[in-house]
Length: 331
Ligand code: SF4
Image 1: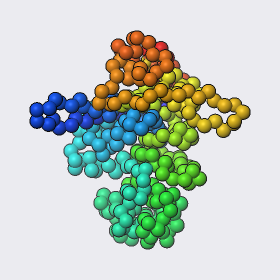
Image 2: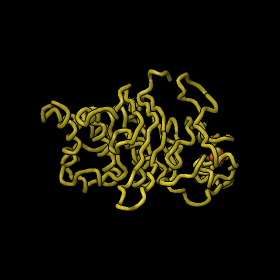
Image 3: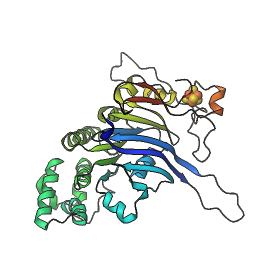
């Protein structure tokens, strides 16, 4: 991959939530949901964000498209900083960045027919006639595997998998460059999950769309990703291409996370490592390495100094995309 292939460059992204100060009370510490997160996404690439609940993966993904307003940082899409755009400019730019939600039913208006839901962005942004829009919607339905007659059905008449296909058709309508997939298959049956994941991969191959894929199911992540970023308490602790991350993880947190993935062959049981305790509060994160309170390898220096996310090995590529990044003093 070359540097010109970079579609999205996120630098120093922060989302800190502050609660309003009550009269005569002490100021509350800010909740550091996302703290100094940087990464790139190439055209046609899938970058997955993984980690425990509350690690900041969904906040990061939604901040990229300003569904959550970040506290600071920059989000460069094709070199343009989305965080500097006015609301009206951002509305126009949203054509290029779409989202697929975890719960398709909650994200689809129950009062609109399926065809109207998919046609909505075309109506808002396009200048096609009603007949042209209908033709385009039928084409989108065929691309996501929905029958043309489904256009006149309401969301409640679809199964969970069909509703997610509808959500994908709506996201595709404006021919986006990037789609944020926020746990898109975790509410679906396992058999349907595979169909939806394969559909996303087929659409990527056909249209060159990039995905930021947020998920907690590591088997799905392994299937769909080109690269994977592991987050812990608002920061990226490891980032590598899919095979390197799954076959040779370096950060202790990643190793523990991956050891919990079920092994298909019962004769070669994996050595399961257990994560001790609950994650600390992002309102009061541990000093130094944020993982030191749970890390089996922690040393005194870990409590004092935060390890920077730095390159350990480069497998290929000239723009750093194939580099293996780790935030640990000893790995
Ligand atoms: Fe563990 Fe220390 Fe590495 Fe943090 S820096 S992951 S505490 S060994």
